[in-house]
Image (spheres, one colour):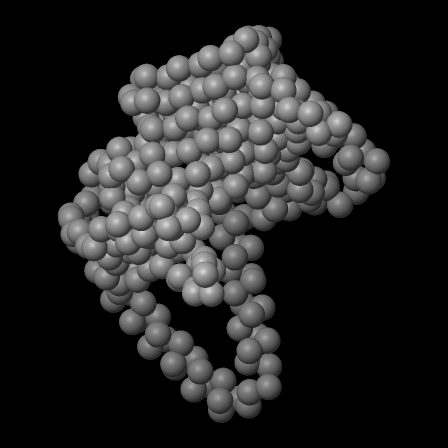
Length: 358
């Protein structure tokens, strides 16, 4: 089984934080942490670069090529699958009558034609199946004494900032993606969201029934009263958060100049799939930011990878090198890497809408 490895690093050109609000009533955030065992001690507060942050960015950047090619023509299922990996909510009735052989054949076709499906996988709610992807995305480990195992490196605390506070406006839907929907796609989106809400409501009701199953009628009455009170409290909290401007406090963050070691692995990829990852970083150079708080300049990154293949005998063959130095400063070196990128662009050129139809 052939494997292609992207081995390299991310370097912060601005402060970095890769978390979500830990307290939605106060909008306080903390960067994600990982624990490391080093010389008999456990360090709990070491920041890391989340694989989900990197993976979702790569997926979006490849998806953008396809979305731009079929602007105003995409159905909602196609858009959802390309950008978010699909969903198993709102299963369609017709999927229940499909034979296993037919489902597997359809998955094979999707993986063969849709490069996003092949690399990243996804969930097909109309088939009630998950598609496995070829990409394994590693954790970005901060280069410091605790993660690299050497006293020659400074402590992770060298790279940690304490706290910041700022005011921001509410986000809206990602217009760059949803503006690509056709009129039929917009209708499908609305119908899907209704199904999703109904499904979520049903799960909530079932959960409530289970928790209240052993209660007496009197107890249930008290629970209803309590539930109404909780709803009013939730409404009060929601009204505070839903204002047009909010105060956000970042409890800690990674400072400029920190380096994260990182590795990507593609299992048995085609040359065009290697080229797709290279193209994703070429697009990343247009807006080289990761994590949250990009609107105040957080998350600007330099990236570089050595790309090589490991064959069935374990022999290593160099493919090339890519680097994102700054905004729109992307460099590629090596005949293998350039050929892979050309193969991907040829795939995109010949891509038809039927090939990505879900």
